[in-house]
Length: 88
Image (tube, rainbow, N blue to C red):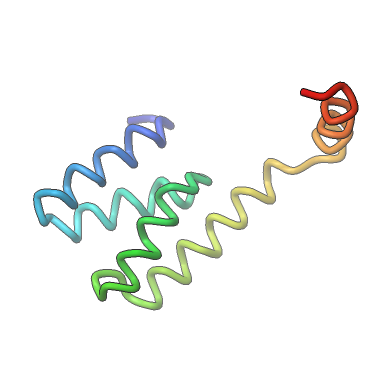
């Protein structure tokens, strides 16, 4: 899938619907590790219903946060301020 994290997320949803939970979790983990927030939320739901281990959820949460942190920069922060001033 080479970087298409929404496709990875969609595949995980498909696997989940067919009760292939381990495959689904694998795909959700990969997508969450790349910053896909929807996959992180699905892993959280899976954790709450007992399909995802505490360790796996914690690992995904740390990786998700790291992916989000990597995309932050001073230049992006300044651009966000400018967009907010312009009302975008």
